[in-house]
Image (tube, rainbow, N blue to C red; front, side):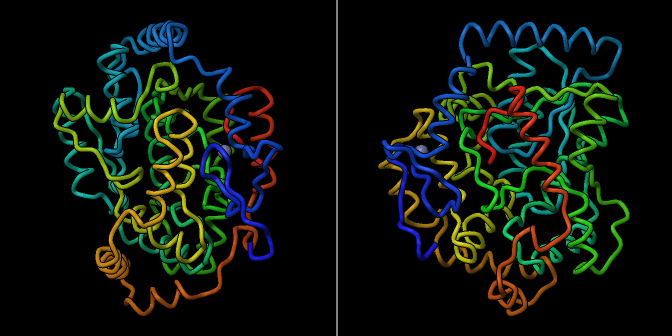
Length: 380
Ligand SMILES: [Zn+2]
């Protein structure tokens, strides 16, 4: 970065800390250009989207006849998954099973939100608890691997747990809180945005730095869920939040007034590890601020001003004292001493390309997805 001229987009706050960002003559970044030319023309959170949502609801209901549940929703307690649970039950009239993966890092607030939502909506919740010894071993292995993608172990547990459960119970529809409204600016790969669950990468890192066999830890590879689950098992992933007006503040207000659900200070704060990783580890060890992408999504969709985002990103979400105590908490929880975690923090950074992976194949897959319109966010 040092020999490159610093530049920030003239509309959002994405900047040259993304090593492959491109700016046009008007100073607009390629995320903004992609939003204008690819996302916006294909995003209809109006009557058109509503009609599609209703059609979809009927199809899912019909398919669910005679089954215990129509669909499954992975619930973290965060805004997107909480809101889609509400929409599924109250607006789509579905009978979803709420599925939560407990990887050991839930904040009290996330747990409280899940309880309130489950009670308030009167839905069933299934919680899968990941073997903590295995989780810890994989997380420490990833930390030692020195890559920026430190949330891959949790993401792998969440998505794989969900896919495995859906497969075992022959549930065809997976509803997710994935949406353009708050996520249209997808963080670049260098900022820990590795595109999917890569079993080869996980196995290689774990074989080099792990100490214990992963006997029960769920790993469903991206090729399995994109191809086998989809085309052989007929599993369909549905994103209802793209078909309705989804405004972050309004959704937070509604969930709070209906269920006593509490809003988080920032996206991904439902996991204590993710909160620490995004607010401390990433910006200080790698120089990447995921909030830059989160805020840019809100700017592109008219939910935040560029000025407010610049002001907010100037300092961490959490104060210094709290971050210091979280550093100790994370170290202790992972059975590391503070100085051991500090030594990892001070070590040389690496990237996924330092390990065996199938990034090349995934790249072909995402280019095909973009070409046929199944992926509209910017993938390079
Ligand atoms: Zn931009």
